[in-house]
Length: 401
Image 1: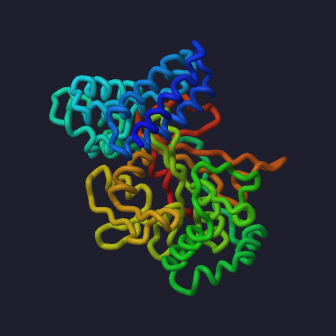
Image 2: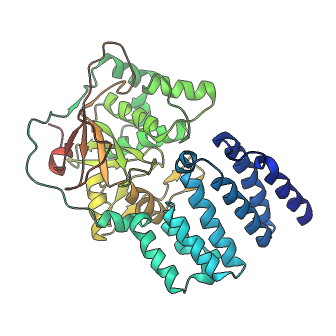
Image 3: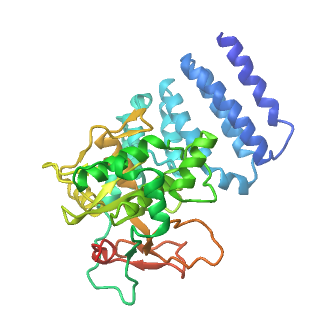
């Protein structure tokens, strides 16, 4: 079996040999085939052949044009990381240390993975490995990065708009309430019970698919119906849109919040909801993608600002026991809050007006401005003159009038 795998691997290598500079499309096809073959080698614990296959993959990457190499830099970082693992497993210390450094130089940022990966145990006690882990910590230890963020300012922003929340009397929100019979879904309990029930319902009726394209019509009814019709999921933004409109339809002040990482090269973010709970007189965190909400050690529901502060200060946080992804993968406090959300709580993006059909493009629709909340001193090269930026958290998280 090992010989047949080796033959398969070697047969792939000539695929690009005829071209001095393979196209990006050719390289990606090669990569897909190579990845499948190498995965089989790992399962067979044929680490020497795995090492050779990774070296061949890296050679093909280096044949790309400089432009394509830059665009595909994440693949380079992954190849070098796997090479570090292969060299480590094959007891090639210096090659493993060099490859690990190259991976970080190319942008590898999975700090927690490298921290726990037993494949690297052969080099883990080396001084140069510890040095590279310190580098990696600065870009991949998201809780560490969040703790290093500057504080917010207290000076009130000038000429910033007032946040609004569409009334439940709006005809479109009334239609949503009746269409889904939200009164029955929310139940007759108190406000906390109703808010949680609506969270559970959205989490269960729509699956999450982070790679899906957003439908043209982005309101609760159309989103849920297209998911049923096409047997598809939607991304976190669309799930939060659905939940937001359901909360508004039931008379709760609500908005969806885009939670962003510090790094401009990190294309991943997460969108969740905040909803105002009258009995608590505060916003609370509700995440339909992961069926998640967060409390303190006494069981009091927390909002985004409180969770962020507690992460920075190392105070207790409790994730609900039934937090999960698509009713398949259970979430833990360590994975969801300390890692994933710590990464995505560096800065925030919200619309001024929380309303029906917020992101559906409609001719003649009135412009809905956005406000960004940055830590003091934080800047991005992609900042636009059309976006309003504040470093005042009190303004950004103000309670509804």
